[in-house]
Image 1 (tube, one colour):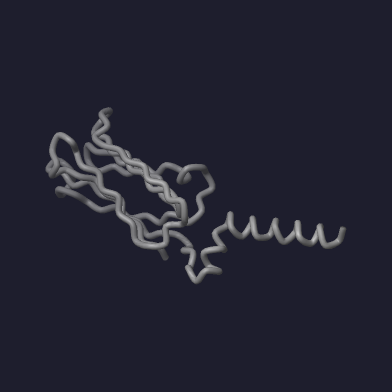
Image 2: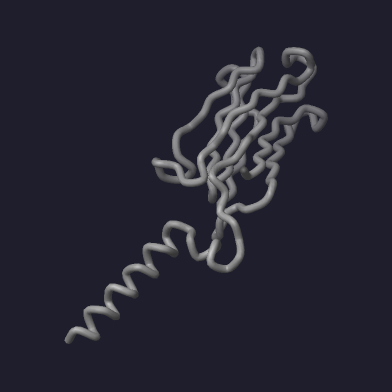
Length: 135
């Protein structure tokens, strides 16, 4: 009986490690503390043709599906972002009209620099992007 209880505790510990991402560290992969991110809209009517705003995103967010939505304003444009260790999402609006949107989800933690770019289907020169570098 004692062996069964010890085995169950080991299985619980392994499951906890997997859910927290420690398995990647055990395999030689360093799980980041978070991400330094840049977001921008590049368009003729955006301020200065395309400003960059910076923010830090956590590796593990408290919410589901990428955590809390972050909103950034670029003149007439608004960009809504989700970013954490598994999710990247960018929704690009001009006033009440959505310009473009994308959502990506990873099965394993995002351990390298990642960039998400969306284009305005009406003008391929206009774009919004989210760039996140682990730290």
